[in-house]
View (cartoon, rainbow, N blue to C red):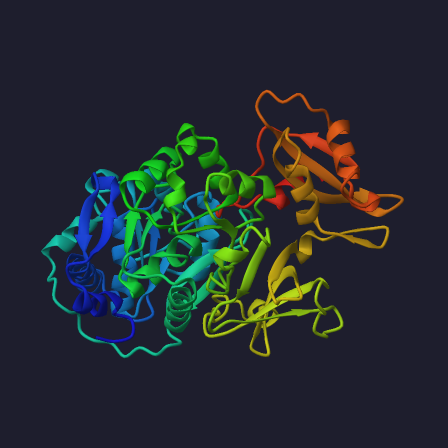
Amino acid sequence: MHIGDWLARRAALTPDKIALVDNLRGGRTITYREWNRAANRTAHFLRERLGIGRGDRVAVLSMNNVETLDLLFACGKLGAILLPLNWRLTAVELARYLADTTPAVLLYGPEMRATCEALRGEPGVSPRAFVALSAEARLRGDDIDFEERALAADGPVPEVELGWDDPWIICGTGGTTGTPKGAILTHRSVTANAVNTVSSWGLSERDVTLLNAPLFHTGGLNVFTTPLVLAGGTSIVCRAFDPDEVHASVRDGGVSVFFGVPTMFLALAGHPRFAEGHLGRLRIVISGGAPCPEPIFHAYWERGVDLKTGYGLTEAGPNNFWLPPADVRRKPGSVGSPLFFVDARIACEDGREAEAGEVGELLLRGPHLFAGYWGRPEETAKALSGGWLRTGDLARRDEEGHFYIAGRSKDLIISGGENVYPAEVEAVLAAHPAVAEAAVIGVPDEKWGQVGRAFVVARPASRAEANEILAFCRGRLAKYKVPASLVFVEALPRTGAGKIDKKALERQHG
């Protein structure tokens, strides 16, 4: 066994513990012994049938399934690099990313047949093989069938020499336009994130999570999935997010820890089963990926659910902070204190350390940081400086050392020389009873340079008008922070990670 062979180590410790529950196959259970053997067969198949070795990129274009997890840990065994692809991107966008990352093979699921077929005609896309993850997914006669791995041995693969700084995953980060940047997650960074999470969040082999965040995103891979392998816990694998499945799994499946983005928590709160109170059984409930409106927190707290804000990014962990249960209601919006092996500081524009209450850029340091962007040394140098990651996020720290995220520095609106933080304005908008969701961007203004423009998704059957909502804001915000205009929209555009796509709002309405 070597540093990349996580499943062999876990199978030696708790072979009969249930590792996975496959909801795509009727709740089939998989022990760590069985999962390790499946990953071994996958590794042998990749190595012997496809010629995959250390450093080769293995691209996978599929919605969530156990096979993608098998590929993750098979790559760890081989020293290969998993390249999970954002299936929400178009073939044109994916082709640019694949031309940069040059995978040796591309595996695809049944839902992605059309995108995969379109990719074949794009310049720069030239893997040595296309592999169908299932028989019904297979597009062409010369495509390889992943089910051939059943013929491979399930014993250990030949050991490779791996260092902590060898890449394990390239995770795409960026928006839904242009070419995503490939963040290199090494064996060190994945392991350190798992160690930080288990030790600081108190995960154990008794914990069960629901894996429905997309596996092309670090939230799906590394918020709970890899940490629970380290701890010996269980992941229930789901194709995608489904509110009914979440409520049922918490009620009947023993789910104890759950991660989601704000839109997921909004959907869960609007589901008929929310009133039954089953979500109160969750031990850890974390919202991440985007600011969560405070009314959503109160809706969960009233049901006895300790919903809290998390903070992470692909380039760091993604887990970085922890807020103890005793502080969840006392400090709404706080992400808490840094995890065990995480250093955090807030830097002002002049480079000095920010005082308590002062807003500046959040910098992070620790073994969980990524190694840089694939093939982009200049952008890597901008992000990593003196061992610190410049997150591009604005934050403040209170007198007790708890951190709060104020928003993205690039989203900052400077109106008449005053700083306006969209996240603060969005939180006030979301507190209005007629507002389901809100987003704020800056638009040009002849007098002030920039002013805010709000985009609001109204709650069903609400009759509030723009002037009423803006008046609500004027009672709670300084005049310069109140949006100059408000636009009602049916829905807010989203990135592949579920965040509000403000670039799209700027293109459409800015």
